[in-house]
Image (cartoon, rainbow, N blue to C red; front, side, top):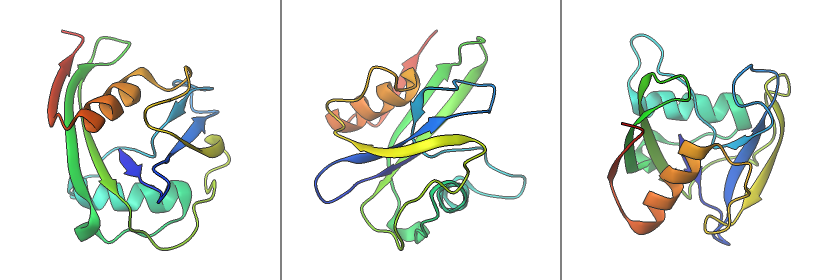
Length: 135
């Protein structure tokens, strides 16, 4: 997951739509690691695919790792990276998966933010590098 930090402190969230998972909820740009890809390259690729901005992988800071159970009870590991450096203006580059993007204060996230994203952002704000949820 990528926390794009704007100069006013707000971060970017995208409204999921048409994916079959958490549709209607807001989440950070994110995705899965493809075979043969490392997590840092995956984050840079996903943010380009989803919001059309280029990030130098060297500009990504790991800010939190979460071991959690998803709503179906499956264990997952979520990597949260942050950066204030990117090229381009974020747009909704996947309208078939996203109803829109918007900027939000990290300390006042909307109630319809995906819960594990909200938890990861809260831990990031506290400077906590690791958490476990749902066990």
